[in-house]
Length: 74
Image 1 (tube, rainbow, N blue to C red):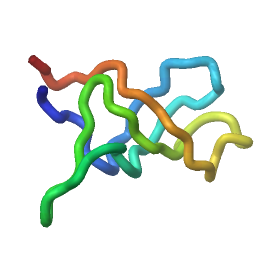
Image 2 (image 1 turned 90 degrees about the vertical axis):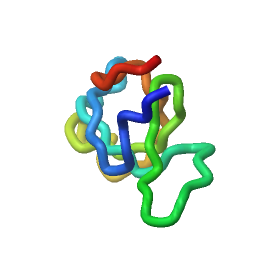
Image 3 (image 1 turned 90 degrees about the horizontal axis):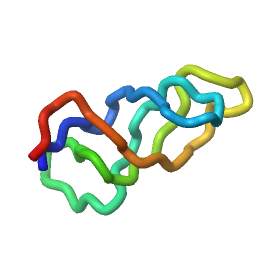
Image 4 (image 1 turned 180 degrees about the vertical axis):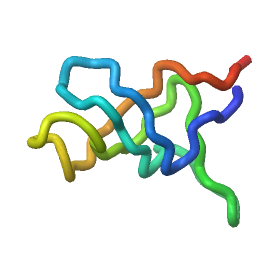
């Protein structure tokens, strides 16, 4: 699978919580490599913060699952 969403990527939120844009701060289950950012693809669980949306959701760390990406994945 092509890892198309590195840490610090901004993604659109596709649910009814009131969040619009999410900022990826961590990818769950990634061991890592020196000087290489952890990246996520479709189906990965990430920890995010809300950058645009309801004020009561701002400044909180929330889990999310990646449903789609622009980069082709096979």
